[in-house]
Image (cartoon, rainbow, N blue to C red; front, side):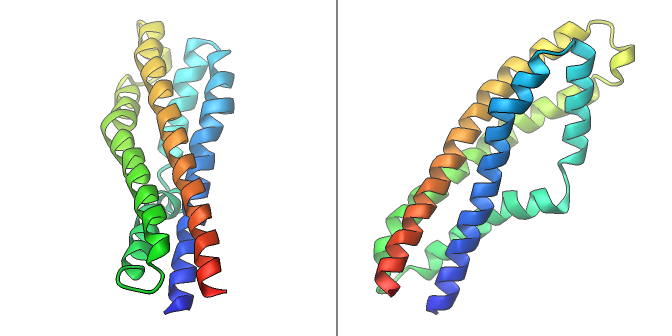
Length: 166
């Protein structure tokens, strides 16, 4: 059982860390870079990114973080390793914030951007960009902070777990 706890905790930390890195990279590099481009470039680039991000690798990380963290928490219930549980629950709650924000804000904004259609055929591309960018960036920063905090908590959970099993 110790091996399963360790592997699930490690998988939770890795998948959460990869997701946090993705959201952070958008916050500090991708969106600031696209902000320096014209309306057409930003809209088209984000449309293509949003189309391509839905793939197996992303889904394994994005959903795997939730599944592995929840599994790890369950595996620590009623065991001598309960000292890890508060860190796992806190990480899980933060990651749920990420999922809720993604599902209720960022994905609907991505869908609106896709529905705008071909940037070469949009009459007011600046308005499409403005409706998308400000809200998307703001909420993505929240996702980056929450997922990074969840990753840090899982890192600490690994430390506590190591102390208990070592």
